[in-house]
Amino acid sequence: MQIPRLHPDTIEEVKLRADIVDVVSEYVVLRKRGKDFVGLCPFHDEKSPSFTVSQTKQIYYCFGCLAGGNAIKFVMELGKRSFADVVLDLARRYQVPVQTLEPEQRQELQRQLSLREQLYEVLASSAQFYQHALRQSQGQKALQYLQSNRQFKEETIQQFGLGYAPAGWETLYRYLVEDKHYPVQILEKAGLIKPRKEGGGYYDVFRDRLMIPIRDVQGRVIAFGGRTLTDEQPKYLNSPETELFSKGKTLFALDQAKGGISQLDQAVVVEGYFDAIALHAAGINNAVASLGTALSLEQVRLILRYTESKQLVLNFDADKAGTNATERAIGEIAELAYKGEVQLKILNLPDVKDADEYLHSHTPEDYGELLKNAPLWLDWQIQQIIQDRDLKQATDFQQVTQQLVKLLKNIANSDTRNYYVSYCAEILSLGDTRLIPLRVENLLTQIAPAAATYSKPVSAKKVWGTNKLSPLPTPH
Image 1 (spheres, rainbow, N blue to C red):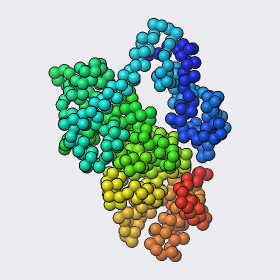
Image 2 (cartoon, rainbow, N blue to C red; image 1 turned 180 degrees about the vertical axis):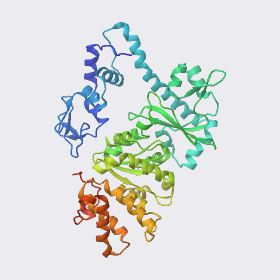
Image 3 (cartoon, rainbow, N blue to C red; image 1 turned 180 degrees about the horizontal axis):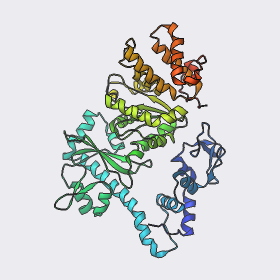
Image 4 (cartoon, rainbow, N blue to C red; image 1 turned 45 degrees about the vertical axis):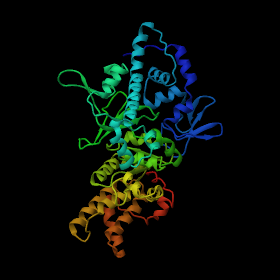
């Protein structure tokens, strides 16, 4: 539908009600400085904040790239969206009545506007239904699982709105359609029911599952994850993609974690819902989960809005699948990491599969210590390459060397590259320091045959800092 022209009164009312600090804070970590707020500009790459937001003037301005304007322009520029689309979105958010200049188009406009509102409403009602069902006799098995197997307290169960989908084929359908009178089409668009292939009618997507609401950054339910309580496959079932929910653009628990990420200036990404919930329950409130998919660049950029130093720790499962997921995530983020746009660390937990399991036998302080000492992604990659290899065997030695060269070739900054060339040369020298210069020369020849230059590497402390993780130097 072509969006009709908006009445000037609607536009003015949106400008009045949409507070710029409130709007910008969803995308940028803002810190108070005098009367204004400052943060890292979302329109260009920078390491020290030059982006200023004035609450009194209701404008933003970047002294680096000269971007500036009001709340409407900010959302337009950042999301590459039309003026009318942004005004309508802000009108919904700030409950501004929408008027258009063509009265005959108002009905259609309201229908379009109300679709998303109806989806939010039916999903919120579903979440309440699932939470209620958890407390009934039929939900006892699910509640016991949360309390005994997962060791979650009542406070945590309520904080994350955990619930139970009854086993019947049409339980939620009947409640929402017959009792609450929601249109069937809305339930289907929300990903809650599916049409039967034969005989007509609909059935519930989630049945006899422990239900985990997935929320957007503003805390609104946009989808669900359901864990089976039997041997049914798949073990975890997510809502389908909808008008509100895109798996690759959503992070579980970001609404709960964004404050912690900003405060601690670091984000922890785990694989599963229960890992994130367990970390929050233990007071580690800067954790999000990637919804069981490979971490996408869009998800990473979403997290990085909330941390100034761009610190990101991947704590995926320690099994083979988890290692593969880590490798895939690194593949997505590598370009940002090589440029120093993200400080990427990898945490593999010792002797356990995941964070949830680790916290059953260790304290939150133990986990915090592991986070602090987690290796940078390049060090982790190098360890993965040499793991289970016998460098005294010619074949293993050759294969490891080739993989190390491939890794080193991508490091643009000469100081950083020299440091890692020296580090890899030490590994390949097997403790014989006399061989290090030879190994260095060999690596450099393979990295850049035409320009095999090498200067004495600076120490690890100088490159990476002492205690606090420093970003990779900017590529030359």
